Amino acid sequence: MKEEALTLYDLNALVRRSIEQCMPDAYWVQAELSDVRSNNGHCYLEFVQKDARGNQLVAKARGIIWAQVFALLKPYFEEATGQSFTSGIKVLVKVTIQFHELYGYSLTVQDIDPTYTLGDMARRRREILLQLEADGVLTLNKEIDMPLLPQRIAVISSATAAGYGDFCHQLQNNPQGYAFAAELFSATMQGSQVESSILDALDCINQRLSQFDVVVIIRGGGATSDLSGFDTYLLAAACAQFPLPIITGIGHERDDTVLDAVAHTRVKTPTAAAELLINRMDEAGERLNYLSHRLRENVLLYLENEYRKIEGYRSRIPSMVVRRINDARMQLMMGQKDVAQAARASLNTQRHKIALIKQRVYDASPQRILAKGYSITLKEGKLVTDARAINEGDVIVTRMAKGELKSIVKQKIE
Image 1 (cartoon, rainbow, N blue to C red):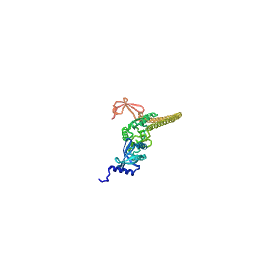
Image 2 (image 1 turned 135 degrees about the vertical axis):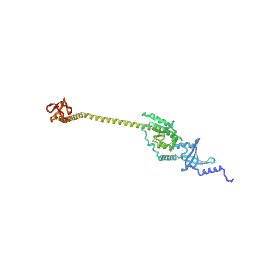
Image 3 (image 1 turned 45 degrees about the vertical axis):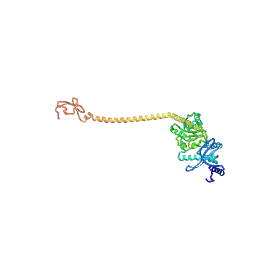
Image 4 (image 1 turned 60 degrees about the horizontal axis):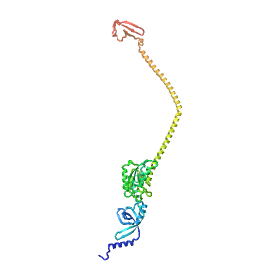
């Protein structure tokens, strides 16, 4: 062992003195929080830096925020950012550097700049929104038509949340007495389980889509530091693509979350969400009243026009009746004349036909034939047309045009 060899403690003490001499000031440092935990009011954590490409750790340091500083810094940061002071967020902190012979290198936090974290949060929100837009789903839920009568409501909220009670009370006690049916799908609305519990609730609603008109996600009250659960890609994508319009009222006014950006309609509070639904019913009622009024006016106008037509018809009935009677009389007279002419023409035709028949009958009569020099032979009053019917000695009568001859057959020549 060489005489100049140092003990480990001496070496660490040398390092501590060197750091105190070379780096006595406080420094603003950008880092990501990791392994944040508190004990006896103090906050123990790690600061890490990751490779932007590979997401691998490239630097790490232990950190501490003493109780008297942490008691002021934590609420200040969370109020300013709406983000919990927890692992995974990027911060800009003012630190002093310590090196302890036993505990080694650490950073003691003196101050924090919330605007840096706000910028990082805004950047992450922009990235999520840009990804949703690239996926073609950013505005899908906004494009769904809001039902005219949104009465069947699927509510995603905590069962014990005051905002849920306010929402139901506002619906049930609306001045117009509209009937609403709101069913709760319980979910965790703060903490690390926000995303998974809301996604589970959406899955349950999706299995019963036909039973609901809209989905309302309400939070109401609570610390603004719990809003980070509503800024996730998976939750935003699920809501953007949900087949029912989604209304958000998660109880904050300063900033919109990613969930607010993709929802069909965003309101500030659960009560405002209830008022939105009531107003929608009012609009439908006003529209119905307007249409009813228009219908009544149009019916009255139609009846008035029809009454005027009837009055016009009634005033024209006497003259029309007289004209119709005169027309009918004229038609009757013309018809009588036509009938007489037709009857005379028919009679003349029939007379001519009868004359022709009469002439034919006359030309074919025995008298006409006898007048031409012919005669008729009768035996015992019966016409004889065959000589074989007469025997010698028979008495026959010969009828001529003028007179008759009675003869006795002496000889028959065959």
